[in-house]
Figure (cartoon, rainbow, N blue to C red):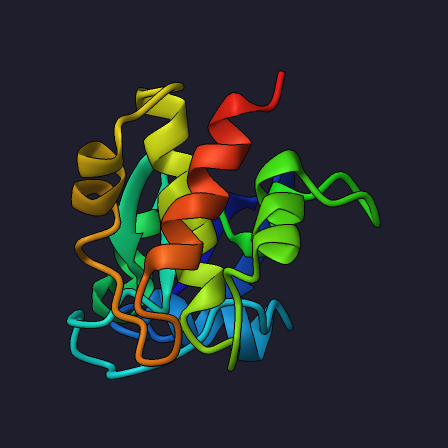
Length: 152
């Protein structure tokens, strides 16, 4: 099946099996390896991307459901080599350790900040509830989102 979609602002066409996972198309066909596979069951959020502005787990989305859609991956958060304020805050606050959850956390945080530019700590924790991290205990991740929200 031929699928036309926008990925990080660039029009892409892929010819793949219709039930192939969006995650696999991003990683294997489009070489966007920032999106990670953690559990493959939609439980961990490592594969979080924006699909037409909505936060989704790419491991659960068949590519046939994305025809004509706009996808934003972690690679789409930066401006070329320049990190976004959110990405910079993850670096400065130590919000990333092993790196498996980090892309999904960044995309989920980006989605949260788009909806709620100045979230409370409770709103941040709720907004990231679908993303699991086994390294940081979330304290530094929450601090990174708070810092990004405070950045003009």
